[in-house]
Length: 98
Length: 222
Image (cartoon, rainbow over all chains, first blue to last red; front, side, top):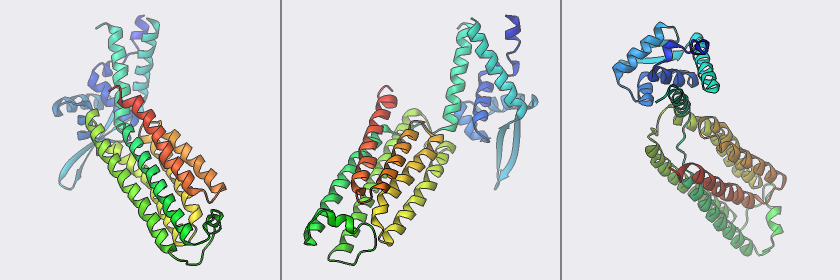
């Protein structure tokens, strides 16, 4: 039993992080505001979870200016894709076993 | 909440976010039904105009129709008038259909809490418009060249392709409507001269069936 739980990734324990990864997996690139709207979270909340995922190198953050406005977009990395897929498989196995 | 319930909830949320963020799911089934009825009314109106023309052009025989379908025909009494009327009917049907669809879709999106103009609706629109506009331009060129018999099959085929292309960005069901229109268009291409009939089936009957299925499947329960 312990062996299965060990496959669950600590980085995805949080709902918002799960949400961020889900959105990034099916979209090439997502803007900050769009992500905020989809997940229905505050600026600060989203930023802190994004930076946690960025630290794990699961998410790539791209900051640039569109005209004078700063524009931040997010992308999932190869590592992030694999980690999330493993996490989902672990979740599925956990549900099957019980 | 038990551990298991929490995981199940997580999976459900993941699924819904993936869908919501990549697909525009607020197409209205009701608009499909109304579009279909309007198209059928347009077809009946067009048919009556055609019949009036046959009467005027004194032969009054049905097979006359197929003889001027294929190639350029000499200008006769009221011919250009008839073409103008038919194009006008088609434009009217199109305008009402688009108007009703946009209105009901906006309403549906509000109900779903989905924004009407975001990345997913833009992707849907762009990918639908590419085949659709090509088909429209192609049809106009055909009319200009007096190749009227090809107009109905061409519009059905391109409309089918547009729906199939758009299906990646919205509810998957629209793919089947696209395939049905495509097959119908090809059938019409094999039996030129029955364009109005096939048009009525494709834009009328198929839309009504599709709209009803979608309405029952997604809207009634919500």
